[in-house]
Image (cartoon, rainbow over all chains, first blue to last red; front, side, top):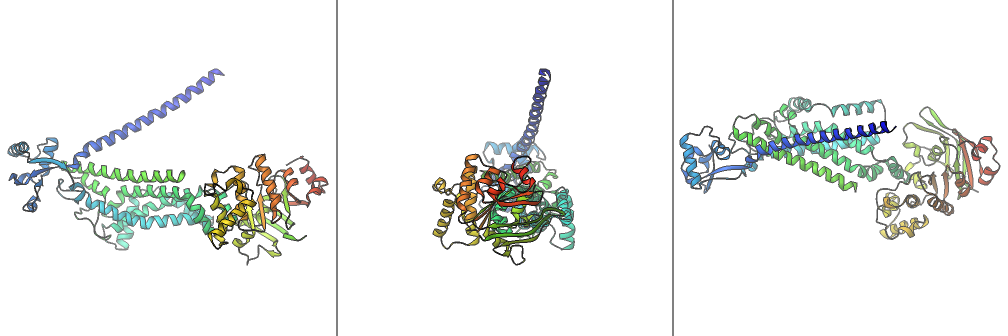
Length: 352
Length: 252
């Protein structure tokens, strides 16, 4: 008896140890990934500027001539200079140019400052001028379309299926298919968007409205499943209490069921929102991968979104774009963590 | 003695399965009727026929007559929402809404617009809580969440909530099965007081409780109404062998 008991305790100890080991491994990988991204990405938030009177236009960015005579004191340097200042890479710089740079350093006519342009510029062929402003706008417009279409449709579908629909073979079939759709790869939704919204409905090609609708299609099943799970967790005793008092089914739904299920619904909605924010593949299918240097001013303008911007930059050979890629990943991660944090807060607030 | 509810030849089906067989029973006004019987005998199903709570169960089907004040509650012209303002219900497990005590009681009057002003509503809430014997315990914390009350208090709150819409009949589905003996005693006392204004139907597993609170008792077995009559008579000289077996504890 004591022997068996010892064995049982030993097994439990082992199980716990295994759990701890896997947790530690997961944290290690997470740490390595984040560490790598931050290490590579933080220089993207800095840029090299050269004093306007240096007289060496070959060290400035290709667009610098447009900035002369506008009273600007410091001009953004070219990406080769930027790389030399940040990492000491010589790149395409000649010995003479490096000499000049060292002299400028001594005269304090070259400096590293915070890269505001990374947030206020749109995409550019020049890494030192490229920024995320345009793609942030694209993401915002796209997600507005997603919110306006997927959330009311998804929540409405879930409410109807869970509370009003008769339970028969047809609704069972619909339910099973919604669950399957939630597991369909997102690129398939991109194909659907391409065929339906662009080829069939002739909506303008790389626009926020097409992207938003496509992401909306992708989010719909997830929202329906999450909302239904939240609704079905409402105790039936609560519904019976209200029905017994003479509330109509609609009153039961909106006075009792929805408020009770709201934290769950909100969590599902925000998580699917965060997923839509980070989604890339379906947008590649509908052509949002195009190079877009101006922020979209309407839902029909050509637009790109932050994750696609990251994808675009990651394919560029310039060293400056590697930094930009990691920098944009940091911004995207911060935004997604922010939304997930909101989801947690809502859950906590309603639980208490 | 007038009959508040009169049930004639009621049959209840869940899909193809018949749960109640040809039940006929009258409920005298301002009296408490206890429905007793072993688990699964159909007494709760029968209770739920009286305010059409079975409507929410898919493919539940009723035939026969349930007359409330001589009007058939299953007639197509009857609005089930209105019916439930006349026939209130208290459930097995206390199920207050996750809101304040005040809002729990005020909910019924609110959805049926039974008041003219806030003062009016305050009065309804107070009166209902007084009648449910809960006022003294909660008058200083009306705006606290109802879920913080004890189980017995929650159940009396549910009773207050039911009487706030001023029903004529109150159905109680084993209202004390989740309560301790002291809370049970309070609820039983309350049932006895409520009888002055309401007709009460109570389902119970507890035979002593049926004997204590009811004037009429009906014994159900496997979907059949075996025997019904004045409570004292049913417990002392049961007519049917099954009734005798049940009340003497031979099965159940």
